Length: 222
Image (cartoon, rainbow, N blue to C red; front, side, top):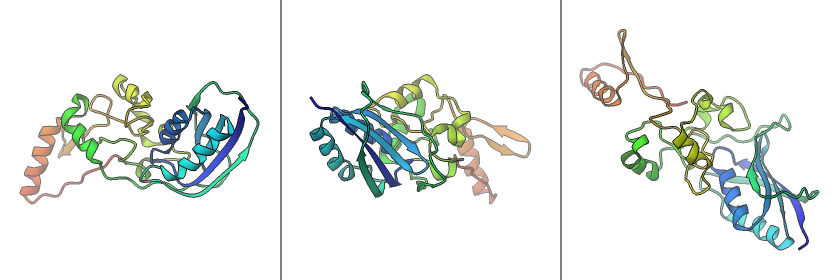
């Protein structure tokens, strides 16, 4: 089988919207090898396979992008075959002074709302998110978009979150803000020198304060 390689450069709203996991799954579906990465210009894909496989991938990609994503430019050109053994998501890097579009924060999805009731490590967890929802713009410190470039970098993933993050079949595959009740962050209530960390008590006390005509400030994840 004659192997060819192509580099695909995609610009638009393609970071923080589950684009790399989508590309990964699509490449595996078409039995392609190579890499996908974020950079400050958008997303770069290196693909290796036969010509027919590459054509099908390039045709399918813009038709099946994540709901929150949008493509303004998609260029592809031939490159040297590097004989990759598989397809992988690699570390992001800066390649120029150009800045890609940044996704706004996305309201919690219905699947995550269900998880808040059923997943033991996310029961009533206020900062729940996945590749389809959650904080984006408000947690980004720099581009390209990766956890180490966000305010989430100080929260080390627990073993459960790490497993979900690494599972191609999981909705949180490469979800950069992934978090839970085990690894944080968490809500605390600060009131006149007192601190409360129990979430149920925090919600109850916040309701009591509001009913008493008090003003409370709620900080989001970003």
